[in-house]
Image (tube, rainbow, N blue to C red; front, side, top):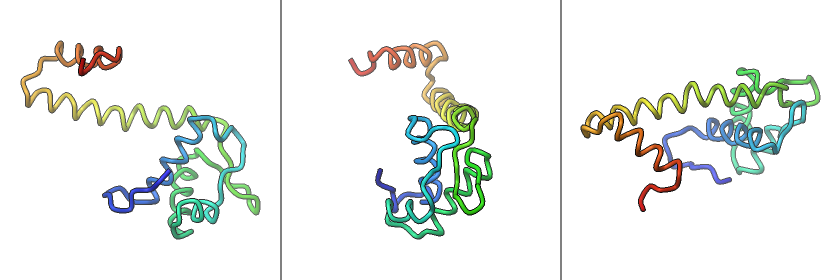
Length: 126
């Protein structure tokens, strides 16, 4: 993965989101040790303090836990917590934005639902 250093999203957030994706994709299992701040800094060519900030976000959310002297590990409920967080924050925000834009464009709720169904079935743009 390549971080977007020119974008508006802070690098530490991109690191934490990348780690979340790695957990969701099964690349890190429950109670497995995760990359250290120094490993992340090397992988992404960033400052270790920035990498640590990304790790600490996940630790603060109890997605990761610290073992003193050993590093950070994936919590047993990490996948569920990430899924819930993304549903309740990211997906909800995106839906709100879509509904607002649909209202601005005078797209009915029914038409919007049909657009979503078409996209879900790979029919959009055909």
